[in-house]
Amino acid sequence: MKPSLFALGIATALMASVAAYAQPSSVKPMTFPVTQGKTYKFEKVAEGVYYATGGFGSNNVVIVNDNDVMLVDTGTTPGNTRRFVEDVKMLTNKPIKYVVNTHFHFDHTDGNQVFGPDVQIIGQEYLAKAINPGILNREPYQTSTGAVLQTQMDDLKKQVADEKDAAKKAALNKQLAGAQQMQAELKELKPTPPNKTYKDKLVIQSGSREIDLLWLGHGHTEGDTVVYLPKEKIVATGDLMESRLAYMGDAIFDEWIDTLDRLKKLDFNVVLPGHGIPFGDKKLIDAYQDYLQDVIVKGNELKRSGTSVEDAAKTIDLTSHAKDFPQITGKGADLRGMRRLYAWLTERGGG
Image 1 (tube, rainbow, N blue to C red):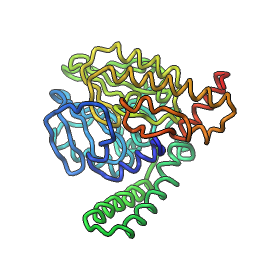
Image 2 (image 1 turned 180 degrees about the vertical axis):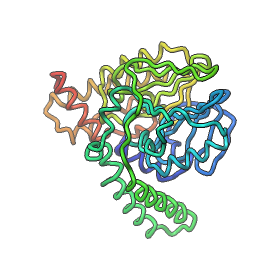
Image 3 (image 1 turned 30 degrees about the vertical axis):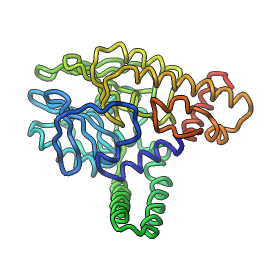
């Protein structure tokens, strides 16, 4: 976990393909039938339930019900979401009635504006507060529209100029074109909050399908939604639980561990995460809880010793978790996550 995880997220989004999400993982891949659209790949996890990868930003979920469709998360730009919706038409001609935002981060919500008033955009109560015009001036939205994206583009231009291999140069040019497209599409962004919210639980009965929207507690953010299909035993977790390490810039660290305990109590066989790949082994959730606990303990030790947050981000040793999260290739952590940890420790009277 060396560079910023959000920077990595943007870098992978530029790939605009399923390969963009092939982050190192200890998870054994699950195999499902595949439908390939122009932009998105759809893995059929169960009847009417698809895991969508390949666009800018989050991995999404499509739930085709008897008479309508629910989308879980919308991606990083309005243009990306239009492409997503167009590809969904390969699966069904039923109308999109519901869009669920698992949390407020830009790579899951920046397509909300493309949907009309006939579509229910649903999120936990916190989202209505978090998604507003002012959010463009704070992290992680500054990251999506500002320095990181421009840095990625500048770096890609340099790589293109230096690369001698024709095939590699072509691949880099493709990434650069994707970055330029993302930059252009972000100019039309209008933060759009949910038009329907819930507090703890919302049950949607769409024809024969039951869909439970659950707030299990604070974690990745203050308002994470878990989408649970009890009959199919499938849970879509957004970034509350990925198959890899998640961004921690808005984390509530101790409660995240407790919230994952409540997640594990649900009866499911498949987790569809906001990033990474589907998985079914709850031991990965155990491993992430252990990782979070280690982050808290070691971060607190560094803060108490007077180590600056910048130095802590360079020196914290989480390498013992590399067997479960191969993103960890040496000492260090995301600086924004470490800043949040130091702030959280201060809030709790620690360090």
